[in-house]
Amino acid sequence: MDEVMEMPPGRKPDIDVRRAYEKKIAPLSLTERKDELLKQYEEYKKQGLKLDMSRGKPGSDQLDLSMDLFKYAKNLVSEDGIDCRNYGAMDGIIEAKRLFASLFNLSVDQIIVGGNSSLNLMYDLISKALLLGLNGFKQPWGKQGKLKFLCPSPGYDRHFAITEQFGFDLITIPMTSEGPDMDMVEELVSKDPSVKGMWSIPMYSNPTGITLSDRVVRRLAAMKTAADDFIIMWDNAYQFHHLYETQDTLLDLIEECRRAGHPHRAYMFSSTSKITFPGAGIAVVASSPENIAYLKKQIAIQTIGFDKINQMLHVRFLKDPENLKEHMKKQAGFLRPKFETVFNILEKNLGGKNIAYWHKPRGGYFISFNVMKGCARRVVELAKEAGVTLTPAGATFPYGNDPDDTNIRLAPSYPPIDELEKAIEILCVCVEIAALERLQ
Ligand SMILES: Cc1ncc(COP(=O)(O)O)c(C=O)c1O
Image (cartoon, rainbow, N blue to C red):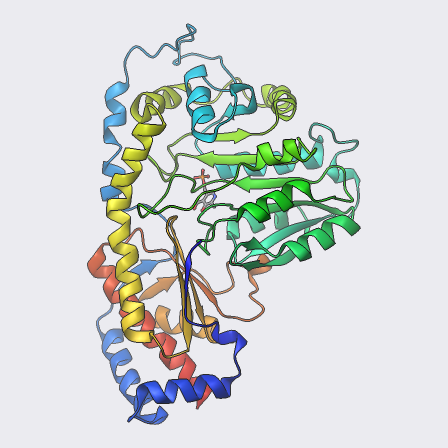
């Protein structure tokens, strides 16, 4: 569970926020404080900065950690005699399946190791569900009229974009500190057979940093759904991406679904994008043995095989769960100071002012930052004019529409620390200016 800083300003009346803020900036008046901030803002604008905090890419120092992977490019034959340089092993080499099986506590018949992107596997699964149907479907989704997909929000814009592109109605599900609002999820799935699935980033979620509680995972596994072809898209992108010694833990949804009598409900995705190289890692889809057997038959029409050379390099470089853990500690060594830089500057400039709140996740790649209701777009616009690119306001909600206009996703991983410091200082000034425009 992550730590929540401050109260959600969007949920407090402006009058309370103004009182608390005035107290904090005293003896300055609101007008005096705004003049002071505008002066700082103009100074920043003059500097012609170009700082980008918009996407969660690893820094180049993190990428350097995996360069030894290329040393293993010799004798590229798998233990069962498959030459990785040639066609074959459509569902992945046995060594790669075994590595993911041990990482996620699954058996190898529950796993397909794919190409360079888990997002691509997710897109592919949704398109297969629509056009062909998946294991256990009576009919492909595409033959069943207008459909809906549940989108816990704030969430990942690229998830929402997939289901939007395929014409689903996207239903926003609020996130609580334990994960998606399960009362609402249960209500919707139990009554409406057109609700076909749900997105979830169960650990160190993008962007909230939240890890789903055991209770939420069990409810997802056990809930009764009106649709007998309902699936959960379990995007386990950040299971190994801890920042601290004290780590979140996550229940295994595939196992919980099996125990609850819904063994084919969960499809899990992951990749080494934020372990080795984004765009040049290896990705995995996992589910019940029956779902995976069915999927393999479909994929066998689509490809003769994924990139087994990269699979072999990854297996040799990452070795086993213990070694991967050590590797991820090195990654955290670069990431943690960046996250802490952001927390410290936010606390110094905005702490106690009641006009912003944020989460302190224990892992992942993002900080979910919330400003006063109705101010997020304005903050992003002000930051842009001062040379700081942030993820567009609203991007973390279906259709790019944050109903409270309050959430901004901060991605601290890519910029070097000195740039990050400047970007967050500027962000804080923008947050206060936008708040003052509303409070005055
Ligand atoms: C939650 C989540 N899933 C998937 C991805 C992309 O993964 P991949 O590179 O495996 O396609 C990202 C990238 O930021 C992400 O945050």
